[in-house]
Image 1: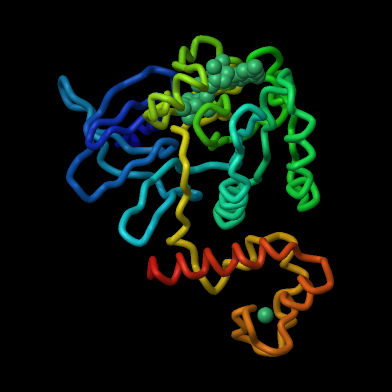
Image 2: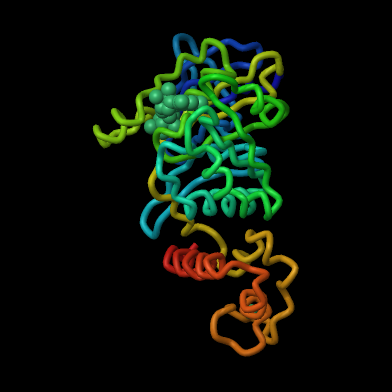
Length: 295
Ligand SMILES: Nc1nc2c(ncn2[C@@H]2O[C@H](COP(=O)(O)OP(=O)(O)OP(=O)(O)O)[C@@H](O)[C@H]2O)c(=O)[nH]1
Ligand SMILES: [Mg+2]
Ligand SMILES: [Zn+2]
């Protein structure tokens, strides 16, 4: 008996999913039962019946990227190798959000990169200067203009399975259109998007990079204002803060919460100027979220 056909999920809407078969053929399928939860990027097993295609199982994932608060979780994409945060000078960048994405990337064992978009606009140099802390942590900050010259992004996308994340209006969909000919993703003026209060992109969709045998792809996601990480493990959270790693395990108490305990190596590193105070504060915030999430 031959193995059941497999396919890559390019869009998921409740029990209906859009798939692409290994030969590139697009198919729409229905998910069997209520148990299976499907994310974009999943590889799924199919059963083809006359007139209908059924998703019967999900191939074990390398990782699953999602956001959550104490009540809900929202799957974003599976089987990623990279998270790319898109920022731009004409939208007020929430730097804590960008830090949250970097932390989520670390815990999902993904490379993290910042795409500093709209290099053609005034204020870009100021934006780049504000991104210096990310570069100092070892993350690439790639300057590009999705609208005029997206080429600098290409070496970062080839060979990777990338999720684009960002606030609304940063240019995620514009970048997809620039590097995937024919993607035809809708984009909108920043002002129109912000004033309507609605984001232009409403669904998460996967696009294959041309000439990569469908091995490289990127996922466009709707802009967000918050990114909850209640599902992270409070005990290992500090590992995701790359600059804290050298100090971990050096506190006087093995179960140190890096708060008010004597002999805390992280508190000492903050006092010595080696770790930014807001980063330790973010660690505490995320730990409270994770403990409230109770996962
Ligand atoms: N000047 C300039 N404008 C750009 C550039 N890239 C994107 N834009 C514009 O920024 C606006 C928002 O772009 P989108 O691609 O829709 O942004 P998005 O991040 O997908 O937004 P959401 O889907 O709402 O999350 C559009 O008007 C784009 O034309 C760029 O490199 N330079
Ligand atoms: Mg968009
Ligand atoms: Zn400590």
